[in-house]
Image (tube, helix red, strand yellow):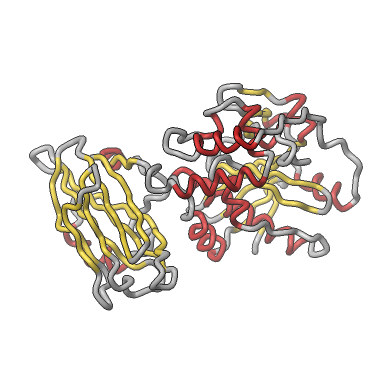
Length: 390
């Protein structure tokens, strides 16, 4: 791992290909595309920083939490904790290059189980494969000097109030400098069993796309203050994966607006597909996403669902749907089925992979604006559905 201090206070760390691959794979378990991308960015940040600490401070025992514990939080809130000695470091990653302030979700400030000692501002650039830690502060300072936004439920602190020189932080840890890092916070009410279960049922379905803002913080905080209730909420949301499926707006692709999990063929390393269709690309826009097959009859394998759209002269949009193996796999899982369905889920067209098929596709079709359809992948008892609107 290479790293350096810029200016010379900012710590820049390279993201390893292994961390990228693992982070992407693990993030795909989450139910919503926004949650998957949040988990991916957090995992890149956390894994890269932990590797740095292990390299520079081998005497420290840096525990690695179970992935289920991490995903249960990333499903609903940004940020993660790294334990360094007896101190808790809260990492707050963002892709934004704007470093005018540090913004911290209220969960990390006012929920006793999640409160940290130090809060680190981190910029993550997954494309160029680096993270930049540009400042830090304490819980005490955020609680006393931070601006609280009751709408977004965040605390923010101006960059001028952050400590920019990370050398100060690491030297203070080595010298075990005594510092008041935490402010005393009020205990949250305990939830009766029936109320907790009711909240989990309510927040675990598609009517609560942003669970953290859907109920009063006193209830939300009390729910997340219990690791058990947090896990149950996560499991409930996972069980609702298909029903909470995000409607992907393909018309936005024409304006070069893409959800983070939908990437170009080049980013997905679909070299074969890129070469094969290069001569007929024209105005076609293509984006793909990785989906992991978890059927009982095959080992876990990634596949790439690729969608191509083309504006037609009559105002309609041409759509092509293809499925490719991901990574080093040369062939699709045998018998995996790709199905085009109506908005209500009725099958329109279906194709099944044979032995050693390196891709399958739905026959290209044209549709008007506002047309909705679903794409379904099935194999044995496993099923994933993505929903689209043109």
